[in-house]
Each structure stands twice: as structure tokens, then as C-alpha cells.
Amino acid sequence: KKGNAENGKALLAKSLTGEAQCLKCHMVKGTGGSIGPDLSMIGLKASKENLYDSLLTPSKAIADQYLSWRIDSEDGQSITGLLVSETETSLTVRDANGKDYTFSVKDVRKKKDPKSIMPDDVIKAFSEDELIDVVEYLTTLRTPSFTADSWLIAGPFPAEGDKALDTDFGPEKKAFDVAATFKAGGKDVAWRTVRGDAKGYIDLAALHGGSSANSVSYMARTIESPADQEVTILLGTDDGCRLWVNGEKVFGHERHEAAAPARDAVKVKLKRGSNVVLLKVNNGNNPHGFYFTIEGGLDLKLGK
Image (tube, rainbow, N blue to C red):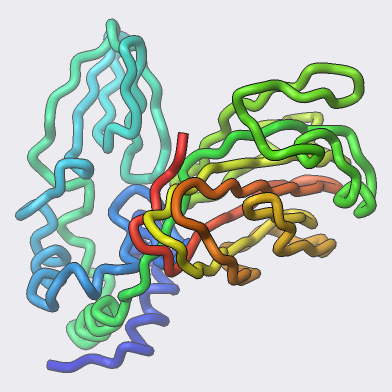
């Protein structure tokens, strides 16, 4: 049977908050969750038969990076989810609701779970015709999409009003260099790391706490590209922003609005090798944060 791709697209979008909840775990072009695989290129990677198999029997074949782990801690907690990070001293597991739990390695036992974190009855929210429509839409997804799960951040710097977006608080004075501190307000300021949530949102209000209101922050990432190529940056910030790529300002706005994925689309050229992305976001009052996705770039990777 051939489905209606447009109806499938609408059904998938509705799943972000509806019963099916597909986009609670999966991301499409920067919208959705980061629990399961990004589906932005699934139409190139999987046949219709593969897609039906994955939806009807999700535990039949599980990629190594999406294996479930059961973590039992000495204090009685038992969490099953994806292992999102592990060091010599700690590990972090993300459950099916996108909540992260961090444990000390010495206080837990971990064991592989043979079942997929994707529920076996995920298709119960769709009729047969709706399932066919969703699969039809998934086969049309053939554009690569890249979302960084963490950023380097400097700030917040106290700043009131939109004029702060055109005031240099330090990082704009010279080529971006995360290996060194920079001067701001007579003090040495160092970069630190901030991670996105399960939906790819960087929540600056939660990070800054009481310092979030009337402030400006800088976020930076190095993106490695295997070739010169044109891409589209999908951006949604709360509030206004300025965006630089390799030292060139490519976008900015002064709107005061809640962040939303892909609200703005900015075409830029990446060069072969390392590309430095610098994003500056101001805030009047909470909420405060941003979404950032690169669409159309082949084989992009995060730099160090």
C-alpha cells in the first residue's frame, strides 16, 4: 500500500505531544527528542520493510549505541535507559522519558537489557492507514541533520536591553580560542560546558539561575566538515541573538519570544576542516535558551 506522506508528516508532528510520542524520542530536522536515532535521513538508510520492522518489533535489531542498560544502585534505585556518558568515576543513563540520572561507578551494577527502550506497543496510537502514512513520510526524509548535544558557554554577563547584543563582552575581540580565558569586566573568564536536554534544548535559565534575567551569554562549538559545503542553520533563541561562523556575522535579531526549533533558517558556507560557530543570546526575563541544528551538511562532526 502507498500512503499519504503529507498526512504522515502531520501525524508525526502531532506525536511530539500526542499519544504516539514518536518525536518525544526521535528528532527530525532539529525538532524532537534525542533518546532514539535522528530520523532526518531515515529515507536513505531504511526501506519500507525495515521501517515497518522497527515499528512493529523494535527489539528485533538494536544498534550498539541504542542498547538499553539496567543500572542498580546501592541506595535501591533501578533505572533502565541509554548510557549517554561514562567516565572512570561516574556514568549517566537516560530513561525513556528523557530524564538523565548520574551515578558514581563504584556504587552501581550495570547490565545490558535485551529489550529496546522503544515500547513494543508504540503503534497502538495509529490506525493501519495512519501507520502507512507515517512510514510513507519517513521514506521521504533524505536530508542530513546535525544537532550538537553540548556547547561551550561563557557568561552570563549582566546586560539590559537589546543594545547589549552589539556590545562586545570579550569573545568577539579576537578569533575564538577556548584554550584560554579572556578578560571581561577586569576579570578572567573561562569557558565551561553546557549540555542540551533530551529534546535538544539548551536551557540557559536553568543553568544561570538567578543570574539569568537581563543578561548575555556566548556559546561556541567547532564543527568539522570533510569538504567545502553549503548548509542551513536552523535556529530558535530566547531572546535576541547574534550568530558568527568563522568570524563572520551571518545572522541576528532582537525579537523577544520563546525559543522554538527551526524558527529561523540561515544559509552559510562551511569550509573544509574546522569551522567555528559563535552564538550570542540575550535575555530580558525567563524562560531563556536556544535550539540549534545544522541541516544539509554531509558527514559533519563535533570538533574538540
